[in-house]
Structure formats: structure tokens, C-alpha cells
Amino acid sequence: MVDNNKDSGILDLLDEEDYNTILAPDIEFNGLIEFSEPFMIKGRVSGKINATSDLLVDTGAVVHADIKADRVVIKGTVTGNVTADKIVHVFSSGKLTGDVTAPEVVLDTGCFFSGVCTMDMNRGQTE
Image (cartoon, rainbow, N blue to C red):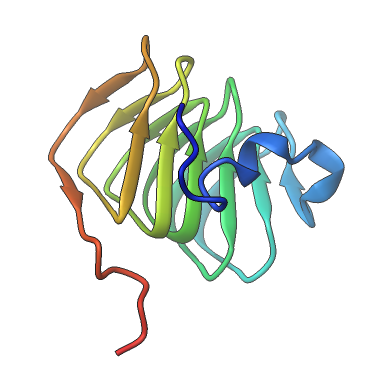
């Protein structure tokens, strides 16, 4: 990944202890998740995710939800539409089935993506 924007690579540098909340691998959650601090999913989520911060779907995690967040990193499996104000990054271990909308979208070699990609450069900017 070529990093021309300092926001795009910052989630790559975060460790588990940098996340305020972590949904553990043995947890299964159904419903609405809303948060304003960095959040990591290692377990299973079904429903909807609305955030004003960063979301990491870790390797092995399974999410069946529409996601709206500031920045989204996918290393696990996501089924649903993903909208980000800054960036969506699907790592080589990641699988995304759904549409993605963000100013910057990174799909690493080896990842799976099935959907429509819309790179909306005005997304997240105040009017």
C-alpha cells in the first residue's frame, strides 16, 4: 500500500491495547452497536454498526451488518454495506461482500470483494 495520506496507514500501526473496546472471539452479538472510540471485533456480530471512530474487523471475526464509521479495516469477514468518512482497507485475509463507499478504498492482493465500490471524495468533509 502506498501511503499518500497519513490517515490511510494509521490503523495498520495500532495494537490491540490501542482500542478502547474489544469484542472477544467467544462473543456473539446481535443488534445495534454505536461507538465513538476505536472498536475491535474479534467475535461475531449481526445487525448494524454506527460509529464516529475507527472499526477493525480482526482476522477470524464474522460480521453480518451494514457499517458506517470513520475508518474501517477488514481482516476478517464482512457481509453488508460499508460506508466510511475516510478509508476502507480490506487486507489480504479480509472478505467483503457488499457495497463500499469512502474517499479512499484499499483492496490488498488476495482479499475477496464482491460489490460496488464508490470512491466519494466529498464524503466526510464538512459543507
